[in-house]
Image (cartoon, rainbow, N blue to C red; front, side):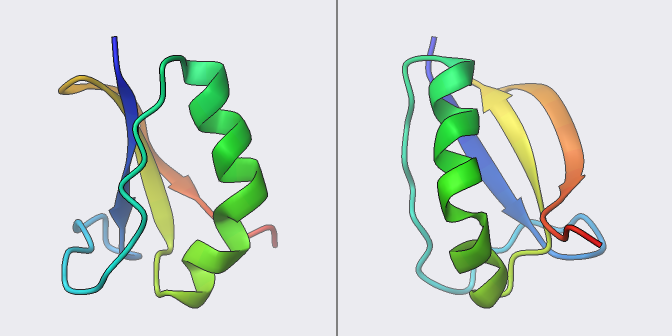
Length: 68
């Protein structure tokens, strides 16, 4: 299993027009920990929400990076 984040705009479209981290993680917990440490940087880069993928299977989607 490999876990990764798909970065999305506010409408759920994938953000592909800018350089963003393309990390791959060995576990869901590692991916979620990384996001907790890096979500502010992603917001500053124009990412509004994320989807967590296990290989090509979506574990969950539409998770907002905004805290309010």
